[in-house]
Structures are given as structure tokens and as C-alpha cells.
Image 1 (spheres, rainbow, N blue to C red):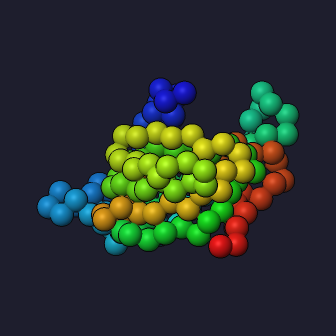
Image 2 (tube, rainbow, N blue to C red):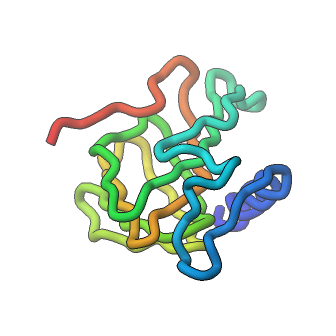
Length: 142
């Protein structure tokens, strides 16, 4: 699983002009010309042709330093690969987990989570597998 996510991310990164962290500070340069804005930036939504009714959503997710994403869940599975910075994965019923550059993680369907950017923020390539027509994200009240 980890190898599959790494290969897909490497292929995606090789085909894009992805800015790197500022070598002097280690912080993400969110003001770079081609840098995506904070949040989940959908890059691709396509059917999974070998599985009727399923689609994959690929997003470039940017979390600013020390920012917390609102609590939410996804109706499908989520696979992520951290490409810059670090984040704390906060998921109900599990201990907090620090994710750093090179880490990959799978989040099961309907797992309520609220990731928090590390001191330098975080950037991850996220693959979500969903039933076609379902919402990508469902917010959960505090």
C-alpha cells in the first residue's frame, strides 16, 4: 500500500512544477507563483474503470502553520502522502500522530478527523476513493 501511494505521488510530482520549502527557514513558501492556496485543492476527479460506481479524487492539500482543519469525515477511503512540512493527524478514538515529509497514511471511511499543521505548515498529496455522487467531505459539529 505504502509503495503504491509513493509511486503515484512520485509520478504526480514529476509531472508538476511543485515548489520546495525555503531551504533557509524550512517553511512552506505559500506565496510562490504556482503554490496552491491553503485547503484541499482538487487536481483530478476520475472514474475507477475497473470498479463500477467508484471514483478517485486527487488533491493537493495545504495546511498553514499551526492551523487546524475543521472536524470532518469522508464517505470513502483517504490515502495521503506528506510532501512538505509536518502535520498532526487528530482522529477520534486514536492517539494523535505526527506526519512528516515522506510519511504515508490511510484514513478509513467515516473516520472523524481534524488535522493540524505543524510549525512550518504541511502539504500532502491526497487520494480519496469514493462512490460516484457522494460528497467529498462532510463537516462534523464540535
